[in-house]
Length: 425
Image (cartoon, rainbow, N blue to C red; front, side, top):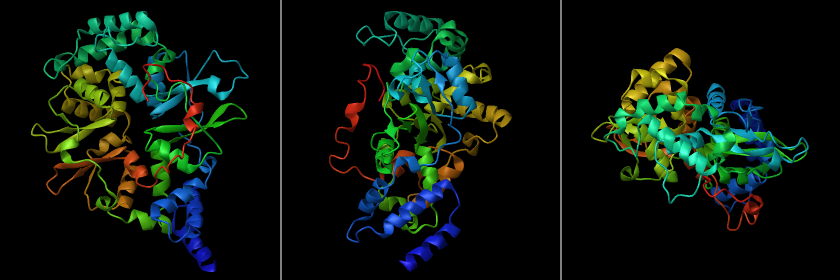
């Protein structure tokens, strides 16, 4: 036990003195007492199951940022963009003061959900599709928006000529300005709501962020009915980066990506967009394939020039100079225009770093440090010639750390209210 304590003190000196590092020390202590016959993954599961989610440090960036349900979509986009957030809880302005948390909030709105809603406006509604959250009137308005922009169902050939027109018409329309956040609740992720209580474990939280594909997990305080914390995939990666030097992390983190099964896909499975395709088409591909980002590749499809994510649709909503300067907004022109915009407005943006790549023989530790330092959500794996070999996301990394035991969640999801028919989960 004395040797364990000495190693603990030594690790504390080597690792950053941060709230996240303190969580890592809890894992270190628990790691040392696990049964020796357990596999590393079983040890991780046991350690993370023993730590309550209340131990996760509050995110200072997201603390206190909430969006009113009666806020306009334009205001919601501005709030998320200005605070550099991917998502925020939506407060139900009609809820009574003594409402419980499940009545106080109507869900979590994300840039991804807003992007999906926006992309729906560029397509005529199908008469066979279920009605939208606001019924027939919403569908008629959406169709009017499509007509105003001169859009039908776009293809790669004609979308380049209409991308700018569409976003210019959308952002200047009363429809966009007057649409309330509550009107697009069907585009929320986990609407009406899914949240953790403080007593739930790290393992539960990490499984939701990985296997169940949640980008963020709210933690509620049952006492005051408020959201106490919002833990994102990026927060977990930052915690792991802060654990450098700890025995348990080094034991896992020094493994090569190929040793732990990353990337999970073959080069043929990578969904890409060519540099000369319209950026609107890129966003549509992401919506259709239910993915958060795509690499922009050269015409031969081998080398990547950059990455576009669903969140990047914000630049077409808050920076009109982009579609004014590039009437035909190809994926390549979009990357150039965003870079120019950020050089003038946000020099700390990760999009200014260019294309971030790695190799299969890099270690998981190196990858985590890159993701955390660059503040990005995916890294593309390339060979020695720069050709794409795969993509690794934050979710992929977390999923390699823990696994779901048989019957683990039991009736956990039974407490979730029924989802709207057109909800995006």
